[in-house]
Length: 432
Image 1 (cartoon, rainbow, N blue to C red):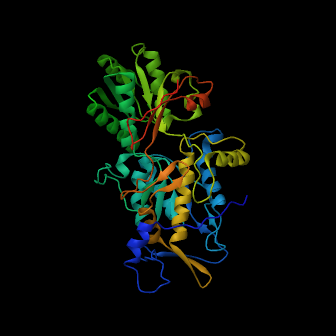
Image 2 (image 1 turned 60 degrees about the vertical axis):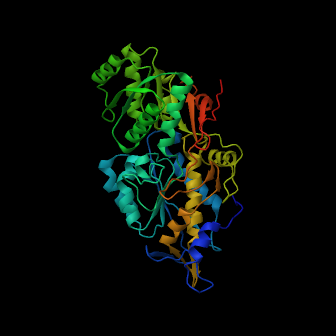
Image 3 (image 1 turned 30 degrees about the horizontal axis):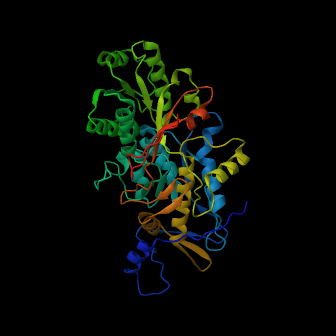
């Protein structure tokens, strides 16, 4: 399918900043910084980018993100006349720190690659972002949300922040605030217990919620770490029940969350307790469990309206239709549109930070980062994308759904009861 091609446009601010220090050659590319090296692509060869995603389901949604990256590349088209992009086979995100070196090695094995779309999991990025960015690659995640990867949103870099790391997903400081406001202001619980797994994603979101909820005047009755995938929950459930919380917030991975919510339902002490989880459980395999009915789930806002990605001209409905034609089913994983926008951002950056020399394409790794550092008001499917100095480029918009029917997960995805925007956090919308 031939899609209208748009040339990458460097923001006015970036041009002003970089041209001021550029050499006197009028034809010089202001993004031709060689400090991180260059990649030379021979005429007729593809420009290599990489993609990494978690494969957690065995159903059709397992490869949603990989297919979306490929569609975005196809929609984007060639740059500088005839140079095309290629992502190749997806690198599997194993989503744990133990396998981090193995995943970093897989990324760095391709020395011709100019960037990475992914990974899915914050726990993975916490380990691989340092070696990957140190090698000169830019990485843009579509679903990493841990505050530990970027900043506190007030100018202080976080523990795992690395120059060259970016994301179109939200910072979980926003999600923590959204869940806090929803519980405290909308539903009314004053005492909440929190359960996490201790990794970059679950701990980061748990801390963000705890801090926000206490600022709202609420009380955290428990803040408990459990082992990933554990099924021995008797002691933990006993501790939680002893404090009689009004609500349980469990930002856990899908497998652990499934066991946890089943244990809660069987315990008997939590009949009136409000259950709230987060975006890591937005899978059909979790939503299809009878024990998950009635839970509230926070995640990225999926109201894309009719917004089109500025690089391809494609909106969410058009991309979903193309995806369905290719795979036989629509995309359902929560961050699919974020993956599409992340891909075009990287492709725009490569187009801006490259030039043809003697028939070959020369790509400046540092220039890619310089372009991304100055992205402002980029129109994506998810909304206007602007990157701060620490890699946060997402809109920060959060929605909370009420999961009403395990036999119809798609209906639950549409059952939005609360919306949050960092630009106007008091602006919420409920659909009853």
